[in-house]
Image 1 (cartoon, helix red, strand yellow):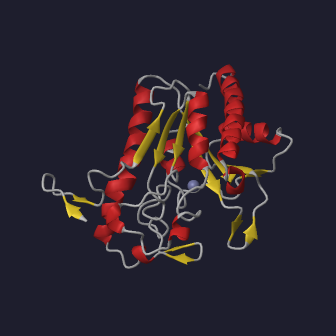
Image 2: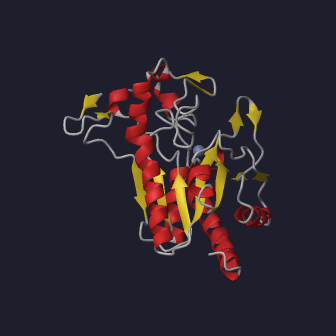
Length: 267
Ligand SMILES: [Zn+2]
């Protein structure tokens, strides 16, 4: 940990480290704004390995396996602005309200994270300022700029889920996640269910809530934007070919939905 003499701000990211926010197609004109809270698994050098062996830092507790490839390709196909977090959810989870136990998890699934034990409030705040805040500040800035420019924004939050969690097998290939939006999720569910080869989860394997999520409630629902989460099962994204296939499929479906929304005057 170092002190920034100029601002007196405690920093955990050194100047030469990768910045937290990854963006693509910032000038894209698609109404879809893509976010990816668990895109990367970087850890600030100052935090070492959080006390975990390499095999823990590459599995699903550290990030959403395979989603980066889907997000990058989908952003390109749609010409949609993508905003993604490069740092691991084990450092601070960008889809949890800061301060809740799962924000900086002491245990993830059944793995104890030694680097997150007995964390001081100050240390937690430092992680928030270095990683969580810049990401969410950027999403807010982008949405506000789009609103100012009368550019429609449909928020799509991209995730992937582990095929087996705590011993329970999950049958869905893909799931939609939503809470308050009544427009986009039904359209997406209908389109996904029309794909003959898919088992589709309706708010599975998770549902969105104010307690267990951040991006959709804060950036989507609080602003009254149409929004949905999309969760893809990780074994389908294990190879780049699978990631590209899913990006192509989602691009086709989201383009169809865009046509429907335009016809209804919603974007
Ligand atoms: Zn995720």
